[in-house]
Length: 321
Length: 283
Image (cartoon, rainbow over all chains, first blue to last red; front, side, top):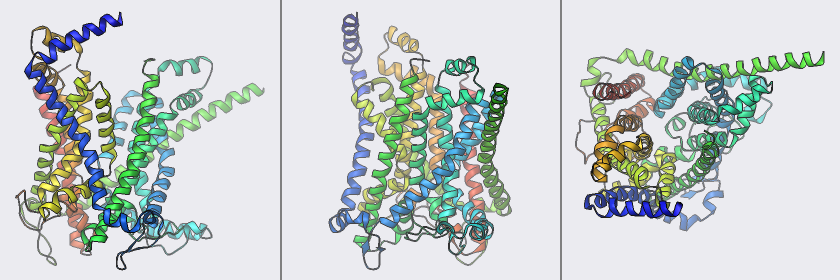
Protein backbone atom coordinates (compact mmCIF):
# COMPACT_ATOMS: atom_id res chain seq x y z
CA UNK A 1 0.00 0.00 0.00
CA UNK A 2 2.65 2.46 1.07
CA UNK A 3 4.73 1.38 -1.86
CA UNK A 4 1.88 2.19 -4.17
CA UNK A 5 1.49 5.58 -2.53
CA UNK A 6 5.17 6.24 -2.98
CA UNK A 7 5.12 5.52 -6.66
CA UNK A 8 1.95 7.52 -6.93
CA UNK A 9 3.48 10.55 -5.25
CA UNK A 10 6.59 10.15 -7.36
CA UNK A 11 4.38 10.14 -10.38
CA UNK A 12 2.63 13.30 -9.28
CA UNK A 13 5.94 14.94 -8.51
CA UNK A 14 7.04 14.24 -12.03
CA UNK A 15 3.88 15.66 -13.50
CA UNK A 16 3.59 18.68 -11.32
CA UNK A 17 7.06 19.90 -10.56
CA UNK A 18 9.50 19.16 -13.31
CA UNK A 19 7.28 19.31 -16.37
CA UNK A 20 6.27 22.87 -15.78
CA UNK A 21 9.02 25.42 -16.04
CA UNK A 22 7.00 27.94 -14.01
CA UNK A 23 6.70 25.52 -11.12
CA UNK A 24 10.41 24.86 -11.17
CA UNK A 25 11.21 28.57 -11.09
CA UNK A 26 8.67 29.18 -8.36
CA UNK A 27 9.99 26.43 -6.17
CA UNK A 28 13.59 27.53 -6.62
CA UNK A 29 12.60 31.14 -5.93
CA UNK A 30 10.99 30.31 -2.62
CA UNK A 31 13.94 28.05 -1.86
CA UNK A 32 16.22 31.00 -2.53
CA UNK A 33 14.41 33.12 0.05
CA UNK A 34 14.33 30.30 2.58
CA UNK A 35 18.03 29.80 1.95
CA UNK A 36 18.65 33.49 2.51
CA UNK A 37 17.13 33.21 5.98
CA UNK A 38 19.47 30.32 6.68
CA UNK A 39 22.44 32.28 5.34
CA UNK A 40 21.42 35.31 7.36
CA UNK A 41 21.68 33.50 10.68
CA UNK A 42 25.02 31.99 9.71
CA UNK A 43 26.26 35.34 8.47
CA UNK A 44 25.25 37.01 11.73
CA UNK A 45 27.41 34.65 13.72
CA UNK A 46 30.29 34.99 11.27
CA UNK A 47 30.16 38.81 11.17
CA UNK A 48 30.23 39.05 14.93
CA UNK A 49 33.05 36.54 15.17
CA UNK A 50 35.11 38.52 12.65
CA UNK A 51 34.20 41.81 14.31
CA UNK A 52 35.33 40.61 17.72
CA UNK A 53 38.47 38.81 16.51
CA UNK A 54 40.73 41.49 17.95
CA UNK A 55 39.35 41.09 21.41
CA UNK A 56 39.03 37.31 21.18
CA UNK A 57 42.71 37.05 20.25
CA UNK A 58 43.78 39.30 23.08
CA UNK A 59 41.59 38.11 25.94
CA UNK A 60 40.48 34.62 24.87
CA UNK A 61 38.37 32.85 27.45
CA UNK A 62 39.55 35.28 30.11
CA UNK A 63 37.05 37.67 28.61
CA UNK A 64 34.30 35.71 30.30
CA UNK A 65 35.87 35.45 33.76
CA UNK A 66 37.78 38.71 34.12
CA UNK A 67 35.86 41.08 36.36
CA UNK A 68 37.27 44.41 35.22
CA UNK A 69 35.45 46.37 32.54
CA UNK A 70 37.60 49.43 32.04
CA UNK A 71 37.51 51.08 28.62
CA UNK A 72 40.03 53.73 29.70
CA UNK A 73 42.73 51.16 30.51
CA UNK A 74 41.54 48.99 27.62
CA UNK A 75 40.88 46.07 29.95
CA UNK A 76 37.75 44.18 29.08
CA UNK A 77 36.28 41.47 31.26
CA UNK A 78 32.66 40.57 30.94
CA UNK A 79 32.09 38.82 34.27
CA UNK A 80 30.18 41.61 36.05
CA UNK A 81 28.11 42.11 32.93
CA UNK A 82 27.26 38.44 32.56
CA UNK A 83 26.53 38.36 36.29
CA UNK A 84 24.15 41.32 35.95
CA UNK A 85 22.44 39.72 32.97
CA UNK A 86 21.90 36.38 34.68
CA UNK A 87 20.86 37.78 38.05
CA UNK A 88 18.42 40.31 36.61
CA UNK A 89 16.74 37.80 34.30
CA UNK A 90 16.56 35.02 36.88
CA UNK A 91 15.07 37.29 39.52
CA UNK A 92 12.57 38.61 37.00
CA UNK A 93 11.68 35.03 36.18
CA UNK A 94 11.17 34.17 39.85
CA UNK A 95 8.70 37.04 40.20
CA UNK A 96 7.04 36.55 36.85
CA UNK A 97 6.62 32.79 36.72
CA UNK A 98 4.02 32.32 39.49
CA UNK A 99 2.05 35.30 38.21
CA UNK A 100 2.20 34.08 34.60
CA UNK A 101 1.11 30.61 35.62
CA UNK A 102 -1.76 32.11 37.55
CA UNK A 103 -2.79 34.11 34.50
CA UNK A 104 -2.46 31.08 32.22
CA UNK A 105 -4.52 28.87 34.54
CA UNK A 106 -7.15 31.55 34.96
CA UNK A 107 -7.46 32.07 31.21
CA UNK A 108 -7.36 28.40 30.23
CA UNK A 109 -9.26 26.73 33.05
CA UNK A 110 -11.34 29.23 34.98
CA UNK A 111 -12.46 32.19 32.92
CA UNK A 112 -15.67 31.87 30.94
CA UNK A 113 -15.32 32.46 27.20
CA UNK A 114 -16.69 35.99 27.31
CA UNK A 115 -14.06 36.98 29.84
CA UNK A 116 -11.19 35.00 28.38
CA UNK A 117 -11.07 36.83 25.05
CA UNK A 118 -10.79 40.39 26.35
CA UNK A 119 -8.40 39.39 29.12
CA UNK A 120 -6.14 37.54 26.70
CA UNK A 121 -6.24 40.61 24.51
CA UNK A 122 -5.18 42.83 27.41
CA UNK A 123 -2.32 40.55 28.37
CA UNK A 124 -1.15 40.42 24.78
CA UNK A 125 -1.39 44.19 24.59
CA UNK A 126 1.22 44.25 27.34
CA UNK A 127 3.56 42.46 24.93
CA UNK A 128 2.86 45.03 22.22
CA UNK A 129 4.02 48.06 24.18
CA UNK A 130 7.41 49.14 22.84
CA UNK A 131 10.31 48.51 25.17
CA UNK A 132 11.34 52.16 25.16
CA UNK A 133 7.94 53.14 26.55
CA UNK A 134 8.44 50.69 29.41
CA UNK A 135 11.77 52.43 29.96
CA UNK A 136 10.20 55.89 29.89
CA UNK A 137 7.60 54.77 32.40
CA UNK A 138 10.36 53.17 34.42
CA UNK A 139 12.40 56.37 34.63
CA UNK A 140 9.57 58.69 35.58
CA UNK A 141 7.14 56.50 37.51
CA UNK A 142 8.72 53.26 38.71
CA UNK A 143 12.15 54.56 39.73
CA UNK A 144 10.84 57.48 41.85
CA UNK A 145 8.40 55.09 43.53
CA UNK A 146 11.18 52.63 44.28
CA UNK A 147 13.48 55.38 45.53
CA UNK A 148 10.91 57.05 47.78
CA UNK A 149 8.79 54.18 49.00
CA UNK A 150 10.07 50.69 48.25
CA UNK A 151 13.76 50.96 49.02
CA UNK A 152 13.47 52.93 52.29
CA UNK A 153 10.82 50.48 53.44
CA UNK A 154 12.89 47.43 52.51
CA UNK A 155 16.10 48.72 54.06
CA UNK A 156 14.17 49.67 57.18
CA UNK A 157 12.56 46.26 57.66
CA UNK A 158 15.04 43.91 56.01
CA UNK A 159 18.19 46.04 55.97
CA UNK A 160 20.17 43.36 57.82
CA UNK A 161 20.17 41.26 54.64
CA UNK A 162 22.94 42.04 52.15
CA UNK A 163 20.23 41.97 49.51
CA UNK A 164 18.72 45.20 50.73
CA UNK A 165 21.79 47.21 51.73
CA UNK A 166 22.94 50.46 50.28
CA UNK A 167 21.63 53.90 49.46
CA UNK A 168 18.23 54.09 47.80
CA UNK A 169 19.05 55.48 44.34
CA UNK A 170 16.03 54.06 42.60
CA UNK A 171 18.05 53.26 39.50
CA UNK A 172 19.43 49.77 39.93
CA UNK A 173 18.88 46.07 39.81
CA UNK A 174 15.52 46.20 41.61
CA UNK A 175 13.94 48.52 39.06
CA UNK A 176 15.28 46.44 36.18
CA UNK A 177 13.99 43.22 37.72
CA UNK A 178 10.51 44.62 38.24
CA UNK A 179 10.27 45.97 34.69
CA UNK A 180 11.60 42.72 33.23
CA UNK A 181 9.09 40.74 35.26
CA UNK A 182 6.26 42.74 33.71
CA UNK A 183 7.74 42.48 30.23
CA UNK A 184 8.13 38.70 30.18
CA UNK A 185 4.77 38.01 31.79
CA UNK A 186 2.75 38.11 28.55
CA UNK A 187 5.02 35.71 26.67
CA UNK A 188 5.12 33.12 29.46
CA UNK A 189 1.43 33.35 30.20
CA UNK A 190 0.17 33.28 26.62
CA UNK A 191 2.31 30.28 25.62
CA UNK A 192 1.46 28.44 28.85
CA UNK A 193 -2.21 29.14 28.20
CA UNK A 194 -1.93 27.64 24.71
CA UNK A 195 -0.09 24.63 26.12
CA UNK A 196 -2.77 24.09 28.76
CA UNK A 197 -5.49 24.39 26.15
CA UNK A 198 -3.74 21.88 23.88
CA UNK A 199 -4.24 19.15 26.46
CA UNK A 200 -7.30 17.11 25.53
CA UNK A 201 -10.44 17.74 27.45
CA UNK A 202 -10.77 14.06 28.29
CA UNK A 203 -7.92 14.43 30.81
CA UNK A 204 -9.95 16.92 32.80
CA UNK A 205 -13.13 14.93 32.47
CA UNK A 206 -11.40 11.80 33.70
CA UNK A 207 -10.14 13.61 36.80
CA UNK A 208 -13.49 15.22 37.51
CA UNK A 209 -15.29 11.93 37.02
CA UNK A 210 -13.11 10.38 39.72
CA UNK A 211 -14.33 13.00 42.15
CA UNK A 212 -11.43 15.42 41.91
CA UNK A 213 -12.12 19.09 42.47
CA UNK A 214 -11.51 21.49 39.63
CA UNK A 215 -8.22 22.49 41.22
CA UNK A 216 -7.06 18.89 41.51
CA UNK A 217 -7.84 18.32 37.88
CA UNK A 218 -5.92 21.48 37.05
CA UNK A 219 -2.93 20.09 38.94
CA UNK A 220 -3.06 17.00 36.76
CA UNK A 221 -3.25 19.14 33.65
CA UNK A 222 -0.29 21.17 34.88
CA UNK A 223 1.70 18.01 35.33
CA UNK A 224 0.85 16.95 31.79
CA UNK A 225 1.85 20.35 30.52
CA UNK A 226 5.09 20.72 32.44
CA UNK A 227 7.50 20.43 29.54
CA UNK A 228 5.51 22.98 27.55
CA UNK A 229 5.42 25.32 30.52
CA UNK A 230 9.14 24.86 31.00
CA UNK A 231 9.57 25.81 27.35
CA UNK A 232 7.43 28.90 27.83
CA UNK A 233 9.51 29.81 30.86
CA UNK A 234 12.72 29.50 28.90
CA UNK A 235 11.32 31.66 26.13
CA UNK A 236 10.58 34.23 28.80
CA UNK A 237 14.12 33.86 30.11
CA UNK A 238 15.50 34.40 26.61
CA UNK A 239 13.41 37.52 26.29
CA UNK A 240 14.63 38.83 29.63
CA UNK A 241 18.27 38.18 28.75
CA UNK A 242 17.99 40.08 25.48
CA UNK A 243 15.79 42.92 26.66
CA UNK A 244 17.62 46.14 25.98
CA UNK A 245 15.99 49.54 26.15
CA UNK A 246 13.86 49.33 29.27
CA UNK A 247 16.72 47.75 31.20
CA UNK A 248 19.30 50.25 29.97
CA UNK A 249 17.09 53.10 31.09
CA UNK A 250 16.59 51.93 34.68
CA UNK A 251 19.44 49.62 35.70
CA UNK A 252 21.98 52.35 36.46
CA UNK A 253 24.61 51.07 34.03
CA UNK A 254 27.67 50.26 36.12
CA UNK A 255 29.73 47.11 35.77
CA UNK A 256 29.55 46.00 39.37
CA UNK A 257 29.15 42.70 41.17
CA UNK A 258 27.18 43.45 44.29
CA UNK A 259 24.76 41.34 46.29
CA UNK A 260 22.49 44.32 46.87
CA UNK A 261 19.38 44.83 44.78
CA UNK A 262 19.71 48.57 45.32
CA UNK A 263 23.02 48.86 43.52
CA UNK A 264 23.33 49.69 39.85
CA UNK A 265 24.22 46.88 37.50
CA UNK A 266 24.76 46.21 33.83
CA UNK A 267 23.54 43.65 31.33
CA UNK A 268 25.08 42.47 28.05
CA UNK A 269 22.42 44.23 26.02
CA UNK A 270 22.55 47.44 28.01
CA UNK A 271 26.34 47.74 27.76
CA UNK A 272 26.07 47.52 23.99
CA UNK A 273 23.21 50.01 23.80
CA UNK A 274 24.95 52.40 26.12
CA UNK A 275 28.55 52.31 24.96
CA UNK A 276 28.53 51.24 21.32
CA UNK A 277 28.24 54.71 19.87
CA UNK A 278 31.01 56.07 22.06
CA UNK A 279 33.47 53.25 21.41
CA UNK A 280 36.45 55.14 20.09
CA UNK A 281 39.19 52.56 19.88
CA UNK A 282 39.12 49.46 17.74
CA UNK A 283 39.70 47.23 20.74
CA UNK A 284 36.76 48.78 22.58
CA UNK A 285 34.49 48.22 19.60
CA UNK A 286 35.74 44.68 19.22
CA UNK A 287 35.07 43.91 22.89
CA UNK A 288 31.53 45.25 22.54
CA UNK A 289 30.93 43.10 19.47
CA UNK A 290 32.21 40.16 21.45
CA UNK A 291 29.59 40.92 24.08
CA UNK A 292 26.99 40.83 21.32
CA UNK A 293 28.38 37.47 20.22
CA UNK A 294 28.11 36.12 23.77
CA UNK A 295 24.54 37.40 23.96
CA UNK A 296 23.76 35.84 20.58
CA UNK A 297 25.08 32.44 21.64
CA UNK A 298 23.30 32.51 25.01
CA UNK A 299 19.93 33.45 23.51
CA UNK A 300 20.29 30.86 20.74
CA UNK A 301 20.96 28.12 23.29
CA UNK A 302 18.12 29.19 25.57
CA UNK A 303 15.65 29.63 22.72
CA UNK A 304 16.56 26.36 21.02
CA UNK A 305 15.97 24.46 24.24
CA UNK A 306 12.70 26.29 24.75
CA UNK A 307 11.47 25.55 21.22
CA UNK A 308 12.39 21.89 21.51
CA UNK A 309 10.44 21.62 24.75
CA UNK A 310 7.35 23.31 23.33
CA UNK A 311 7.56 21.21 20.17
CA UNK A 312 7.92 17.92 22.00
CA UNK A 313 4.93 18.94 24.04
CA UNK A 314 2.81 19.70 21.00
CA UNK A 315 3.82 16.50 19.27
CA UNK A 316 2.96 14.45 22.33
CA UNK A 317 -0.66 15.58 22.38
CA UNK A 318 -1.28 15.93 18.68
CA UNK A 319 -2.65 12.43 17.98
CA UNK A 320 -4.96 12.66 20.97
CA UNK A 321 -6.77 15.67 19.55
CA UNK B 1 -16.10 12.82 60.10
CA UNK B 2 -12.61 12.88 58.72
CA UNK B 3 -13.84 12.45 55.17
CA UNK B 4 -16.08 15.46 55.70
CA UNK B 5 -13.09 17.43 56.88
CA UNK B 6 -11.06 16.51 53.83
CA UNK B 7 -14.04 17.39 51.65
CA UNK B 8 -14.19 20.92 53.02
CA UNK B 9 -10.45 21.19 52.89
CA UNK B 10 -10.55 20.27 49.21
CA UNK B 11 -13.27 22.82 48.58
CA UNK B 12 -11.34 25.55 50.37
CA UNK B 13 -8.13 24.78 48.51
CA UNK B 14 -10.06 24.83 45.29
CA UNK B 15 -11.53 28.23 46.00
CA UNK B 16 -8.27 29.62 47.36
CA UNK B 17 -6.15 28.57 44.43
CA UNK B 18 -8.55 29.85 41.82
CA UNK B 19 -8.86 33.14 43.67
CA UNK B 20 -5.09 33.37 43.52
CA UNK B 21 -5.14 32.89 39.76
CA UNK B 22 -7.70 35.68 39.53
CA UNK B 23 -5.48 37.92 41.63
CA UNK B 24 -2.51 37.07 39.41
CA UNK B 25 -4.52 38.07 36.35
CA UNK B 26 -5.49 41.36 37.95
CA UNK B 27 -1.82 41.93 38.87
CA UNK B 28 -0.91 41.42 35.23
CA UNK B 29 -3.41 44.02 34.08
CA UNK B 30 -2.32 46.65 36.64
CA UNK B 31 0.95 47.61 34.90
CA UNK B 32 -0.88 47.83 31.59
CA UNK B 33 -3.38 50.26 33.06
CA UNK B 34 -0.62 52.25 34.77
CA UNK B 35 1.49 52.55 31.62
CA UNK B 36 -1.45 53.62 29.52
CA UNK B 37 -2.66 56.01 32.20
CA UNK B 38 0.69 57.79 32.47
CA UNK B 39 1.38 57.82 28.75
CA UNK B 40 -1.97 59.35 27.99
CA UNK B 41 -2.19 61.78 30.89
CA UNK B 42 1.41 62.99 30.58
CA UNK B 43 1.56 62.83 26.82
CA UNK B 44 -1.62 64.68 26.11
CA UNK B 45 -0.44 67.98 27.63
CA UNK B 46 1.98 68.54 24.78
CA UNK B 47 -0.17 67.03 22.07
CA UNK B 48 -1.15 69.58 19.44
CA UNK B 49 -1.15 69.79 15.66
CA UNK B 50 2.11 71.65 16.04
CA UNK B 51 3.78 68.54 17.41
CA UNK B 52 3.11 66.72 14.16
CA UNK B 53 4.18 69.43 11.74
CA UNK B 54 7.04 71.36 13.30
CA UNK B 55 10.65 70.46 13.82
CA UNK B 56 12.53 69.99 17.10
CA UNK B 57 13.90 73.23 18.52
CA UNK B 58 17.63 73.66 19.19
CA UNK B 59 18.96 72.60 22.60
CA UNK B 60 17.79 74.94 25.33
CA UNK B 61 14.68 76.26 23.62
CA UNK B 62 11.33 74.90 24.59
CA UNK B 63 8.60 73.87 22.21
CA UNK B 64 8.88 72.41 18.79
CA UNK B 65 7.58 69.15 17.42
CA UNK B 66 8.73 65.90 15.96
CA UNK B 67 7.67 66.03 12.33
CA UNK B 68 11.01 64.60 11.24
CA UNK B 69 10.80 61.71 13.70
CA UNK B 70 7.30 60.75 12.60
CA UNK B 71 8.33 60.80 8.94
CA UNK B 72 11.52 58.95 9.86
CA UNK B 73 9.68 56.17 11.66
CA UNK B 74 7.37 55.74 8.67
CA UNK B 75 10.31 55.63 6.24
CA UNK B 76 12.18 53.17 8.43
CA UNK B 77 9.30 50.73 8.78
CA UNK B 78 8.57 51.15 5.08
CA UNK B 79 12.13 50.21 4.19
CA UNK B 80 12.03 47.40 6.69
CA UNK B 81 8.78 46.16 5.19
CA UNK B 82 10.24 46.18 1.68
CA UNK B 83 12.85 43.73 2.92
CA UNK B 84 11.04 41.79 5.59
CA UNK B 85 7.68 41.22 3.90
CA UNK B 86 8.82 39.58 0.62
CA UNK B 87 11.48 37.47 2.34
CA UNK B 88 9.05 36.48 5.06
CA UNK B 89 6.19 35.59 2.74
CA UNK B 90 8.34 33.68 0.27
CA UNK B 91 10.04 31.76 3.07
CA UNK B 92 6.63 31.03 4.55
CA UNK B 93 5.44 29.68 1.19
CA UNK B 94 8.53 27.53 0.91
CA UNK B 95 8.04 26.12 4.38
CA UNK B 96 4.40 25.25 3.90
CA UNK B 97 4.48 24.08 0.28
CA UNK B 98 7.92 22.54 -0.15
CA UNK B 99 9.33 22.45 3.36
CA UNK B 100 8.58 18.92 4.46
CA UNK B 101 12.24 17.98 4.31
CA UNK B 102 15.36 18.43 6.41
CA UNK B 103 16.16 21.84 5.02
CA UNK B 104 12.64 23.01 5.70
CA UNK B 105 12.93 21.81 9.26
CA UNK B 106 16.22 23.64 9.64
CA UNK B 107 14.85 26.89 8.22
CA UNK B 108 11.78 26.66 10.45
CA UNK B 109 14.04 26.17 13.43
CA UNK B 110 16.27 29.08 12.41
CA UNK B 111 13.34 31.48 12.01
CA UNK B 112 12.32 30.54 15.53
CA UNK B 113 15.86 31.14 16.70
CA UNK B 114 15.97 34.44 14.82
CA UNK B 115 12.80 35.57 16.55
CA UNK B 116 14.57 35.08 19.87
CA UNK B 117 17.73 36.95 18.92
CA UNK B 118 17.79 40.26 20.80
CA UNK B 119 17.17 43.21 18.52
CA UNK B 120 20.34 44.90 19.71
CA UNK B 121 22.39 42.00 18.32
CA UNK B 122 20.77 42.58 14.93
CA UNK B 123 21.77 46.22 15.30
CA UNK B 124 25.40 45.25 15.92
CA UNK B 125 25.44 42.90 12.93
CA UNK B 126 23.95 45.50 10.60
CA UNK B 127 26.49 47.97 11.91
CA UNK B 128 29.39 45.71 10.95
CA UNK B 129 27.78 44.66 7.67
CA UNK B 130 26.31 47.90 6.34
CA UNK B 131 27.43 50.92 8.34
CA UNK B 132 31.16 50.16 8.38
CA UNK B 133 31.46 49.51 4.61
CA UNK B 134 29.26 52.55 3.84
CA UNK B 135 31.28 54.56 6.35
CA UNK B 136 28.23 56.39 7.72
CA UNK B 137 24.94 55.78 9.49
CA UNK B 138 21.91 55.67 7.25
CA UNK B 139 18.18 55.11 7.09
CA UNK B 140 18.94 52.16 4.83
CA UNK B 141 20.91 50.41 7.57
CA UNK B 142 18.12 51.06 10.05
CA UNK B 143 15.55 49.74 7.62
CA UNK B 144 17.55 46.60 6.98
CA UNK B 145 17.82 45.96 10.71
CA UNK B 146 14.06 46.34 11.10
CA UNK B 147 13.49 44.16 8.04
CA UNK B 148 15.57 41.35 9.53
CA UNK B 149 13.55 41.61 12.73
CA UNK B 150 10.29 41.35 10.79
CA UNK B 151 11.22 38.17 8.92
CA UNK B 152 10.40 35.61 11.65
CA UNK B 153 6.96 37.07 12.39
CA UNK B 154 5.94 37.26 8.74
CA UNK B 155 7.36 33.83 7.93
CA UNK B 156 5.63 32.06 10.77
CA UNK B 157 2.22 33.64 10.17
CA UNK B 158 2.45 33.02 6.42
CA UNK B 159 3.25 29.37 7.00
CA UNK B 160 0.52 28.90 9.57
CA UNK B 161 -2.07 30.70 7.49
CA UNK B 162 -1.25 28.82 4.29
CA UNK B 163 -1.47 25.56 6.20
CA UNK B 164 -5.01 26.45 7.20
CA UNK B 165 -6.13 26.65 3.57
CA UNK B 166 -8.08 23.45 2.82
CA UNK B 167 -6.27 20.98 0.64
CA UNK B 168 -9.30 20.63 -1.61
CA UNK B 169 -8.74 24.16 -2.91
CA UNK B 170 -5.26 23.24 -4.12
CA UNK B 171 -6.56 20.04 -5.64
CA UNK B 172 -9.32 21.92 -7.42
CA UNK B 173 -6.77 24.27 -8.92
CA UNK B 174 -4.45 21.48 -9.98
CA UNK B 175 -7.37 19.47 -11.38
CA UNK B 176 -8.16 22.36 -13.68
CA UNK B 177 -4.65 22.05 -15.05
CA UNK B 178 -3.39 25.23 -13.44
CA UNK B 179 0.33 24.98 -12.67
CA UNK B 180 1.25 24.73 -9.04
CA UNK B 181 2.86 28.16 -8.83
CA UNK B 182 -0.28 29.80 -10.14
CA UNK B 183 -2.44 27.76 -7.81
CA UNK B 184 -0.31 28.78 -4.88
CA UNK B 185 -0.27 32.46 -5.74
CA UNK B 186 -3.78 32.94 -7.08
CA UNK B 187 -5.76 30.51 -4.94
CA UNK B 188 -3.89 29.54 -1.80
CA UNK B 189 -2.25 32.87 -1.09
CA UNK B 190 -5.41 34.74 -1.91
CA UNK B 191 -7.44 32.66 0.49
CA UNK B 192 -4.89 33.11 3.22
CA UNK B 193 -4.05 36.75 2.63
CA UNK B 194 -6.12 38.07 5.48
CA UNK B 195 -4.13 36.09 7.98
CA UNK B 196 -0.88 36.97 6.28
CA UNK B 197 -1.81 40.65 6.42
CA UNK B 198 -2.26 40.31 10.17
CA UNK B 199 1.24 38.88 10.41
CA UNK B 200 2.64 41.67 8.28
CA UNK B 201 0.88 44.22 10.43
CA UNK B 202 2.25 42.62 13.58
CA UNK B 203 5.73 42.75 12.11
CA UNK B 204 5.36 46.38 11.07
CA UNK B 205 4.01 47.52 14.41
CA UNK B 206 6.78 45.68 16.26
CA UNK B 207 9.28 47.34 13.97
CA UNK B 208 7.75 50.74 14.69
CA UNK B 209 8.41 50.18 18.38
CA UNK B 210 12.02 49.04 18.04
CA UNK B 211 14.75 51.26 19.42
CA UNK B 212 17.81 49.17 20.09
CA UNK B 213 18.63 48.21 16.46
CA UNK B 214 18.30 51.85 15.37
CA UNK B 215 20.72 53.34 17.89
CA UNK B 216 23.76 52.72 15.74
CA UNK B 217 22.27 52.11 12.34
CA UNK B 218 19.81 54.92 11.63
CA UNK B 219 21.34 56.88 14.52
CA UNK B 220 18.99 59.88 14.60
CA UNK B 221 18.81 63.28 13.05
CA UNK B 222 17.66 66.63 14.37
CA UNK B 223 16.84 67.90 10.91
CA UNK B 224 14.36 67.01 8.22
CA UNK B 225 15.63 64.17 6.13
CA UNK B 226 13.91 61.68 3.91
CA UNK B 227 17.05 60.48 2.20
CA UNK B 228 17.67 56.77 2.50
CA UNK B 229 21.44 57.25 2.56
CA UNK B 230 21.48 59.70 5.47
CA UNK B 231 20.96 59.23 9.20
CA UNK B 232 17.29 59.57 10.03
CA UNK B 233 15.25 60.43 13.10
CA UNK B 234 12.76 58.04 14.65
CA UNK B 235 10.19 58.38 17.40
CA UNK B 236 11.68 55.64 19.53
CA UNK B 237 15.22 57.00 19.51
CA UNK B 238 13.79 60.43 20.35
CA UNK B 239 11.91 58.96 23.29
CA UNK B 240 15.13 57.34 24.51
CA UNK B 241 17.23 60.50 24.13
CA UNK B 242 14.62 62.84 25.56
CA UNK B 243 13.80 60.57 28.49
CA UNK B 244 17.46 60.58 29.53
CA UNK B 245 17.90 64.32 29.03
CA UNK B 246 18.01 66.71 32.00
CA UNK B 247 15.58 69.18 30.40
CA UNK B 248 12.07 68.98 31.74
CA UNK B 249 10.61 70.18 28.47
CA UNK B 250 12.28 67.32 26.64
CA UNK B 251 11.07 64.78 29.19
CA UNK B 252 7.60 66.09 28.57
CA UNK B 253 8.05 65.69 24.84
CA UNK B 254 9.23 62.12 25.35
CA UNK B 255 5.84 61.31 26.85
CA UNK B 256 4.07 62.93 23.93
CA UNK B 257 6.26 61.03 21.48
CA UNK B 258 5.36 57.84 23.33
CA UNK B 259 1.69 58.68 22.98
CA UNK B 260 2.13 59.40 19.27
CA UNK B 261 3.97 56.11 18.84
CA UNK B 262 1.17 54.19 20.53
CA UNK B 263 -1.36 56.04 18.37
CA UNK B 264 0.64 55.21 15.26
CA UNK B 265 0.75 51.53 16.16
CA UNK B 266 -2.98 51.52 16.91
CA UNK B 267 -3.80 53.28 13.64
CA UNK B 268 -1.71 50.75 11.76
CA UNK B 269 -3.62 47.87 13.27
CA UNK B 270 -6.96 49.59 12.78
CA UNK B 271 -6.18 50.36 9.14
CA UNK B 272 -5.32 46.78 8.36
CA UNK B 273 -8.39 45.57 10.15
CA UNK B 274 -10.60 47.83 8.06
CA UNK B 275 -8.94 46.84 4.79
CA UNK B 276 -9.09 43.16 5.52
CA UNK B 277 -12.64 43.32 6.76
CA UNK B 278 -14.28 45.27 3.95
CA UNK B 279 -12.80 43.55 0.92
CA UNK B 280 -12.88 39.85 1.49
CA UNK B 281 -15.52 38.58 3.80
CA UNK B 282 -14.94 35.02 4.82
CA UNK B 283 -17.12 33.11 7.19
